Length: 381
Image (cartoon, rainbow, N blue to C red):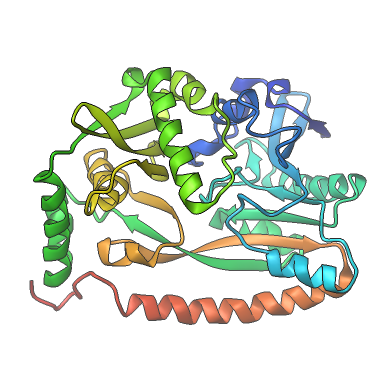
């Protein structure tokens, strides 16, 4: 086997890359990663310097891993700012660091892409070891694998980095045939509240339009970018996604992209952007230029649930955080990340912190579940 490092996704054959993907989130697709690069949303000057590790044999590509060298922790959604502060207080550098993640995307997906014909354990450890070797070569101080797939936890337990837990709120399809079927599973008060919220939008002057596939155009990409910039400005966030990202994506990745736009008085006033495959729907970006009661819930949650039901998707991830999702049918779900810090003293200390944090998160998840909007098995309507 041969381990290689590439600086651009174009150095890897698209068909060979696609052969590594199974039920992975669409963010690992070649075309999505290429859109990030070609729009200069990642690369020099962005704080996200890409590296692609590949493992090959005489028959071709066996495995791959995406890595980014970073001088900050923005756009990751697994927060380690306190760790960086602790390093600074002790006069030790925390950055640069190496991370395996999809930029600006808090979605669970495999970080170790391995061909079905490969000897999984061997290729996995080669990729994990290759990431550590690259980090040391680049004078990075740690390696972080964020939003790991549950199937990968065993690979990382062998290599030793502590596994950190965090919480998101996910919606799961219980074989629903319609939105009303979903509502029937909820407690009466929650059911009434959702109907009230949806009715308020339906009775307004706003009309919601859905675009996917050939209906997506570069011009609509510019519309969505405007809403993206509005949200960044409101939150004081840096707009990492450059001008060409959305139009490029709509041109090359339309078969995995769903755009919802709200129209009022012949103008687009809000937009929400989703990505999907045969296994899940992922809500990613939202923005608006006019305030309407419950429009955010309608366009980011309820329309997504409608889509997931109609397309028989088992999972809908609507992004990071958000306890406000709980009463709308999204239950607390664990996510996982692995962290290898090269400073032995800090590695041990942060490992202890992670174990204590896990217990706190387990208690938090249990408390959230006591507030589940779903009826118990023996509860009436």
